[in-house]
Length: 143
Image 1 (cartoon, rainbow, N blue to C red):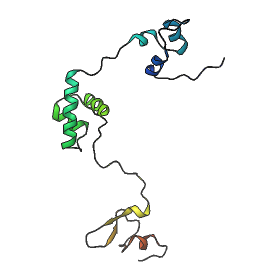
Image 2 (cartoon, rainbow, N blue to C red):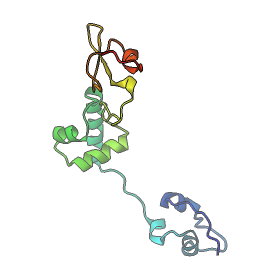
Image 3 (cartoon, helix red, strand yellow):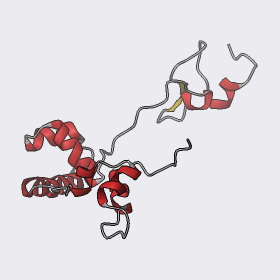
């Protein structure tokens, strides 16, 4: 028996059902597309008034302090961290901060610029200083 590829989301499946179908009942249509009949009748509640107010405040806070993540939002408003995460996710907010860097750095990214114009290795692989990124990458040893 070949199975059809049907949409997985309950919301999409709910849209496929026609309650005024001429030959198929709602129960039979739900059975055919693999949707529980209770899911057809379920109406989502939406956000509470308290959550809407909190979301508005989180949005205002993210404009003032975009570097605040869920932990700081939790401290600021005194709410559960998971709640702060969920509401920030709904708003599409994310803390603006440096992301984790890759563990393996290429030779070109191992250099740090110092104010005086001299280059130095952040993780030196050999002794001595390099005067430029190219001098360290060359095959000739400068020691």
